[in-house]
Image 1 (tube, helix red, strand yellow):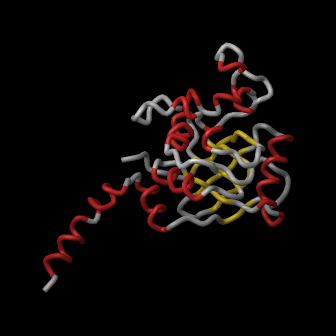
Image 2: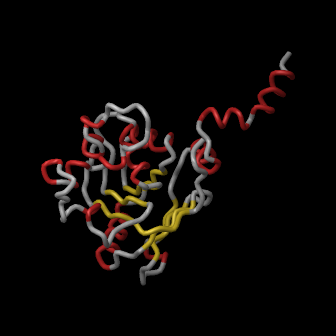
Image 3: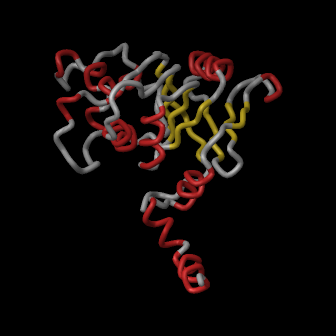
Amino acid sequence: MSKAFTTITSRFVPLNMENVDTDQIIPARFLKATTRDGFGKNLFRDWRYENDDETKPKADFVLNQPQYSGEILVAAKNFGCGSSREHAAWSIQDYGFNVVVSSFFADIFKNNALNNGVLPVTVSDFFLEKIFAASRVNPNAELEINLQEQTIKLLGSEAPPSEGFGEVFEINAYKKTCMINGYDDIDYLLSIKEDIINYENSAP
């Protein structure tokens, strides 16, 4: 069972790079482990360090910039493309991100994220640019993600929601139920065990 997803209000890390593939998220040389733990330290490994040396963080990479932090990663268009490795979702969650926001996700990454308790929120290109612009002006700007209402709001900005600072996002109804309750597929089946039994007993 995963942690149940409630409304999250958090600062965010702006990764304004398009076409980020799963090998950039977690390089292939770190895929030997079979459990989900410990992948966060190697998230974006090749972008974070000079010559793979943890004592030499790259100052221009956003994860190494102390003004940015939070439970939400905001990425540019086409995030999670490339190979289907589930480890990409593991590394994002293990690092501490519970939500990834982008204007487009690769389908396999999106499903892997949902299956591992990471909420992928798809927004319009317009709204995504507003988020990036807000982060440049105010690194302490926050996003509010309400899964029950399926809304995302940009906080800490002067502009009203009517100008594009709030949107509704789509999510599969089954995955929404699982995330709100912290269920994996087995947990969900157990939650409706009585319904299944009643159905079987009523069958002719």
